[in-house]
Structures are given as structure tokens and as C-alpha cells.
Image (cartoon, rainbow, N blue to C red; front, side, top):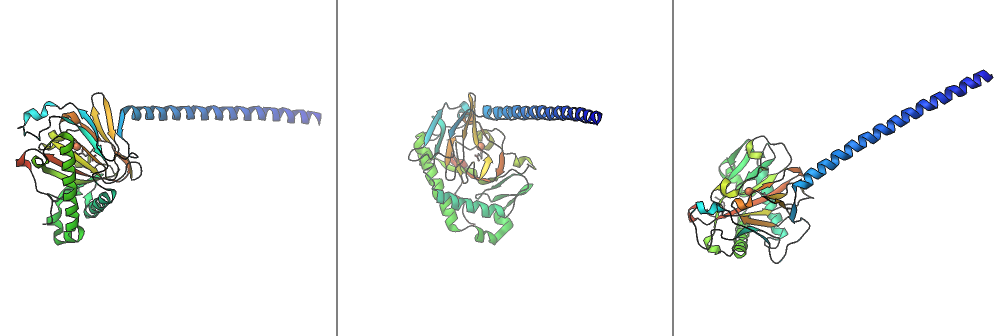
Length: 303
Ligand SMILES: O=C(O)CCC(=O)C(=O)O
Ligand SMILES: [Fe+2]
């Protein structure tokens, strides 16, 4: 009996020691896993954060009354083009305003974009609708919305929608002229001018790869001033998708906000890209101006 007890006690002690060792091994493994995850998260955060030097305007801010202006030195790009006094950029920079387009107007334009893009859309994550040329993303290519959908278009867009587009375009033109000291009558709408819809679906063709750094004057040729009107909110409608100016001294971002207009001179002083959208859907309109009357286009209108 005594022997049995002793054996039992001895067995218990052995089992307890072994359980303790297992428990300790588990705790150590858990700590190792946690530290590795922590280090990876820290490294990820650090590398993402270090990509962003400065936020020029946050989504939560309201830039009312005057635009917030950031001047930069003009690049030499404009020297390769004919100069148009009182229009060709002589002072360059970027600016943001939340008081040119109301939230209601932006929502009407967003619904217009939603209706138009619902007719088709890219298979990848980035679709465009150009109301002027009629180009609409469809699958891996584009169709002409006016030709492809014919009379159906009249049920999708109304004359008021186009009026609103024209009014907004006019106000943006005025604020750009005022900010850069130009004569608004010497600025012309140029192409392409388009609605964009971006989500996190993987790109299927190059047309879906919206995130590459670029210079609008190089990409689009005729642009002298680019404006972007945002139709959805960073952080609540979508994640990622911030606009990034890539300066030599670091990156500077603008966070999209419904009704926000961001505008800038289109040369290489404003190299930029759009961060990849991680979730949700981002809507915006690109409205751009040229100083060259030969590149002027008329406002979009119902055919
Ligand atoms: O949607 C944006 O924020 C920028 C789009 C852009 O860079 C462009 O249309 O050239
Ligand atoms: Fe651009």
C-alpha cells in the first residue's frame, strides 16, 4: 500500500513535471509567435507610414472659404510647349478646397457616375466613364456609351445632370484661375474628362492599373491644370485610394472627401499617383484644362 502510494505520488510528480514542461513550451511558443507577428506588424506599419511623409489635407478636415494652397516651383515642362500669357503656368502648385462643390451636388454627380458605370464597367478594379467622348469601360475594353446604349442613355442621364456638370466645371475653372492668377476665359476644358470608379478587384488589363506614378502633362499632353472632384469619402466609403504627390523630399497626400476639389498645375512639379484601393469603392471626376485653344473641347452634352 505504502509502495503503491509512493509510486502513485512519484507518478503524479512526474506527470506534473511533464505537464509543466508542456505548458512552458506552449507559453514560449506563443510568446515567440506573438513577437514575430508584432515585429512583422511593426515593420509593415513602419514601411507603410514611412511612405507617407505628410498629409496635406485629411478627410475629416473641412477646407472652407479659401483653398489651401501649396506652392511648388514650376518644372521646365512648359518650355516645350507654346506659351499662352495669363494661362500657361508661371506659378505652380497644388490646392484643395471643400467650398466649390456642395456635398449635395457631389452626391448627385456620384449617382450619375453610379448609373452610368452600372451599364458596364471594367472586369478589373478601375472603370471610367467619359461623358464627352462617351468612352465607358466594358470588360477588358471600352465602348461608346452613346452608340452602344443608344436611346437608353436618355433614361440614365438627364439634361439637369449635364447642367450640373457644366456649372461645377465653370466654378472649378474660376477657382483655378483665381488661385494661380489666370484669366479664366483663356482656359479651356480639355480631354479626357472622366468619372472614375475604383475598387479592390485585381487588375485585368493595363487600363486597370491606376496606381502608377505619372505626370498628367506627359500622360495626357494637353493638360495644363488638372482638377479632381471627389465623390466619396476616404476611410468610410473606401480604404487606401489616397492621392499622393511624390516630391523629391517625400510624399504628400490628399485624402478624398465628398465634394472636395483638389487642383494642381499638370507638369512634372506635380508627379503623383493614387494609392491602391484596399476595400470599398472610390468615385472621382477628373476635369482638366488646357491653355491651348486647339485642344479645347466642348462641355459634355446629351447627343
Ligand atoms: O483620382 C485621382 O485622385 C487621380 C486621378 C489621376 O491621377 C488622373 O486622372 O490623372
Ligand atoms: Fe493624374
